[in-house]
Length: 282
Image (cartoon, rainbow, N blue to C red; front, top):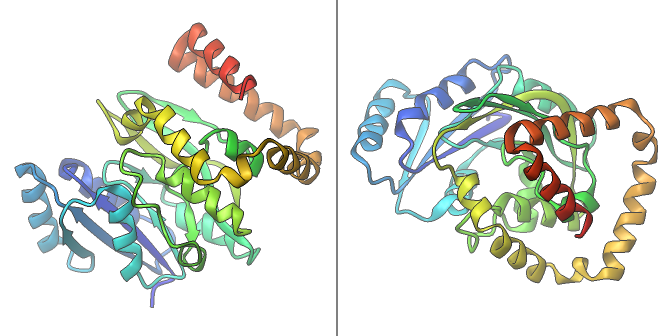
């Protein structure tokens, strides 16, 4: 039985799918399985690519289903997975050869860790390294800063009922991480860009960004108990205490500086200022 299951939902991204599969097959860690969920793809290029890959990679489990959107496709793959841990990977993205090995090493150090995530390497139309902040539940409630492609403990996924399949326009991973935290499953950061996110045209993330306000309102309504001002304040105090040492550590300032540079490079001065204003007025 494999220790890690990599679940790759695919909806009309067949031209990139083999790159995702190959990135998993190049791992320094070998005890894994790959599950590809064809989420009702409709374009001929993807259908043809899937048929070819089924013949080429007989050790990969391919599942065909009607379109149920991303959260549903992930749940489908995870439900049949055999690993103690799983990693969701979109069909147009990739992972570094050390991703599974390094994330597994960290998550095994603490049985209460729900997941381990990393910095992001953008590639394709836009190239940059995006640093991620260290885990902080209060900051997670304020903004969606953890990537979906993290190594996640399957028992934690099972405990909270998986991804919310009502969320069909993105940010299902944000809501998922919030529910994990509400059930005592927290995350840990590896300060290396081990997840590769492809920038091309219009992606699921860019679609979700357009619908950001709608998605955020859904999350805050669903979790109104922790978004109440008094509860938010209590969570803020709790996590300030937990992370007190980090706030005085050089890595915190390095991450903040790198994040500022990234936003300025990507969105310009006005974009940087608007994000700072939005952050301060949460």
